[in-house]
Length: 468
Image (cartoon, rainbow, N blue to C red; front, side, top):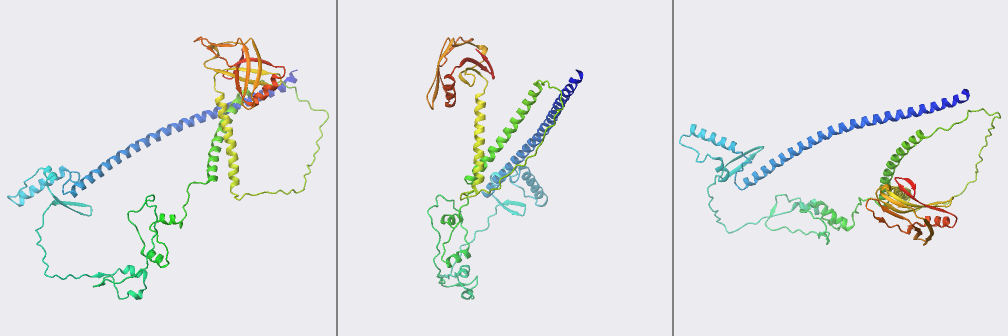
């Protein structure tokens, strides 16, 4: 007897040792992940604090620089008006300069002195002349020059000299025609210059297209276009309006949009599958630990040895011809595949969201109808709070079960003595006798109630069921 159960005990011990080892490994892994996460959070808090201090410092420096630039701008505006601003020359600098000038007058120019020694007088009343040399700035009192007498003209004849646009002539004519003309050459009479008409592009979209404040033309290109009797465009937008340049669309086409949407949904579904896999793995581990190991008999070597016959699968060599109809754009095949994957992923996501919404924890009253082969569960109504807060009386008779409608199907039932009362408020809940169901469930229910069946009321709460 001991020899018979000895292998079973060894196998059971080995299994439990493996389970304990795996649990220990998972515990160590969770501990390592927890430590690394805590370390990462600590480092992240330090980096966040440093970044916050740097950003505050940058904001303070930016505020100081903006204030300094604003003061300089105000000082320059005042200087243009002929006034001296304290932002350019601070009061203490001006006061020190006035004291130095007074010391020089007292030492070298006896009897001379400054009439105003208060810096505010120079800021408000004095007219200044200013100049700049490299990075140095100088200013002084405005000294008006002597009045210049009116010019006297003793001749009534005025000579007018007419220059020549040599750059325009060079662009349209050969060098033999202007060999004797220089850049400073003038004539008493204007030169005769006949040029072909310049064909500029005209349009009526000026109010819709942004225009440059200053046009930039190339005389060489204008001359080349005029010689070839072409249209002259003033901006790049005009050439696009005329159709010379096609607009490049930066927005992706239909295939690109489908690809981006499919990529985003695939990433979301991959993350969801990983999370669900981890949950299933944890649940499976718990179920394995709770499962009772079945007793098995000792392994007995069979008396008759088995027979192993290898049979080679003969594959047909008949070649089949398939006719493939290619669509006009081969690049749509990846889009079709991605579209199919997107639709499938979207349906799975909708089904998962619907299931999660339907599986919210609440108290639910359910009618179950079964004939042994099929079981149909029909939700009657949802109740707040817990089942202990409701007084539920089971119906004395459930009869006259019937289904009406083809596409919009409804379930009808008659039950007597079925009532639900709130224990706290003594309020009775009205129980409906007509319940909407989907067509598939209605078809199954019709086949069930056409045979011998059993029906009873269930109370569901947190996925636990109790018969009323």
